[in-house]
Length: 418
Image 1 (tube, one colour):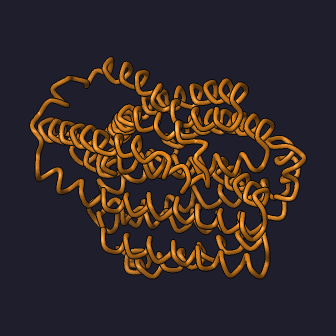
Image 2: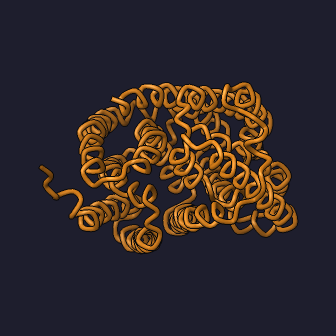
């Protein structure tokens, strides 16, 4: 089964990425403490927003159409060339904005202007970040899984090395510079590997700008922009809520919990983005779509449930291994976070249909509604349940989101085929 094969390669990426990410996180926790972890989490959210605007938010569109056009070299060339021009133009527009307004962004996201220079470095290097993201999306869409695995593996290793060195010498500021520089450095590795690929030709990136393809990508750009704004902004608002209502240490515990959650779910998320998006985009009939979705549920949900159970019962060991004794209070966050993770993955298997089939209006509406609901629940639950309330809000939000996905796709899921 292709999903299993893809999951094996995804597992390679994931193990290395998790290992490097947790080692880097351990170093950051030791040298900066819970407060530093919270600030670095905020900066990661800001980079996600910046990168989305800097490459025109076209990654998912490139994956979909690279998969769809796989047998058509002419369309591939037009897609890659148009995507390349969009990435460069958007980076050239957004980079100077980051440089000029760095003090404002630093104060807005990190609550002071100490990290202004890190944002300016991001502005100078974001074109490399953007192009690296484009090349990885092309590899994903072309189903170049081995190359995709190699690039991501090298990226994780480079990120780890850069993070350890800069955090050791420059503490929190070093961690911020590491976030900015690692993916820009990886671009040159990605470029060398892609250029050596059998399919590669410079003609793929030198064709005229195609307005038809650009309009197709625009729908995905709109969806990605909404996500890029909604998710990080909601996390920034909730992080600031915790800082105000609980403490900056409490925000650090939540950020630490999010890192654990993101880490063990990385295999599933990588499999979905690497396999499901291009696969669902290529399927034409409801019967095939239903079969693929059920297949995903049979493989993915038992794996997520098993992971949640193991993580919960090993939570004290995980905190000790990944962080420091000062992070022990975060153990109270595990139960509801893991409940939310399970329903999040259950919902995402269905929600990927919205991306694969360019269901723009429904995607945008659900994204906005559930982001607002998450923040609203966060404010209510933190008020009544203190720090633990933030993960209770997360769990309830994704339970409702999963039920909504079942309702939206009820005809596809429950339809009987002969």
